Length: 386
Image (cartoon, rainbow, N blue to C red):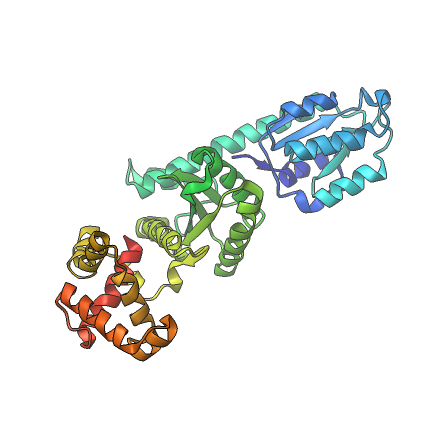
C-alpha cells in the first residue's frame, strides 16, 4: 500500500516548485517511503519503491556520478528521484534525462530554495495517511464479505472515501502457481503493489487484500472494458516484473456493495478453475455450464456425483496402471466417434471398441446411450472444479 508518484508530483509542483524532467510514463509507480540519499553506495540499502532526493553534495568526487547514481537507483527498484538544483548540481545532464526516460523512472528537479526536509516530511505524512485509509478500506470490505460486525457501519466508513454503496464492484482473484519457489506472502505483496500502480492509473477506487494464499483485487466503478484491459495487462506484466506464474479468475461487475458476497465467491471459484485448466485469464461471465456447477455451495454433492461414475474409472486406473479415464476424455472430445478416435490415436477401430467395452464394464453404463455420455461430460466438468 503506497501512493502514486503522480499524486506526490501534483502536490509538490504547486507548493515546492517540483518540475518533471523525464519518465512521465512512470508516474503510476507507487512510493512506499521517501529518503534523502547523498552517498551513491547507500543506494544498495534501499528496498525498492522509494522516492529519493539528492542535492549532489558528493558530486565533485567523480565524473558522470549522477548517471551512475541514477543507474543504481534503477537497479534498486526506486520509484522516482528528485534532484535539488543548486551549488552542487547546476543542471541535470542530458544522458541522465535520457536514461530516466528510457527506464520510465520519473526524474524531478526542485530549486535550491526548497527545503528537502519539508518535502520529505510532507510526502511521508501523505503516504502514512494513504496507507491508513487503504488498510481501513480493506478491513471494511473484508468485514462485509465475511459478515463481521455491522455492515451499515462499514459501508458508512467506506462512503467517506468515495466507495459508495451503489457503486459497481468486480473481484479479481490472482492465483499464484504453487511451484514458484518464492515466499508466497512476499510474492503476493509484490503482486499487490504492482497491480495497485496499474489499477490506480485507471481509478483511485481500488482495494486489495490476501485470502488463502491468493491476492484479491477489488475494482470499484471500473467499466467492463477497463476490467478486461486491466486483466490483460496484469496477466502479461505481473509475472514479468514480479516473478512466478499467475492465473486470474474474474467475477462479474455487479452493482451494490451488499450484493457482493456471492460475487466474491465467484472470483474465488473462477480463479481455482483457471488454475486447474491452465488458463491465464478466466472471466466468470464467459463460462458456460460451469456456472451452474460453481453455484453449488455444497461441494460434497459434486464429489459424490463424480465418485459414483467417473470416480470408478479413476480408481481402476490407479490400481491397475491404466489410463481409461484419459481415453474416455479423448472419446468424448471427438464427438464420441470410434472412427475419429482411431484416426487421432493411430490405433485400430476394434481397439477403440474393446476399450469402450472395458470402460462400460467398470462403470456398469452403456456408453452408446446419450444419457450416459452426458453423465461423463458432466463428470469431467466437475473434475475440473474439485
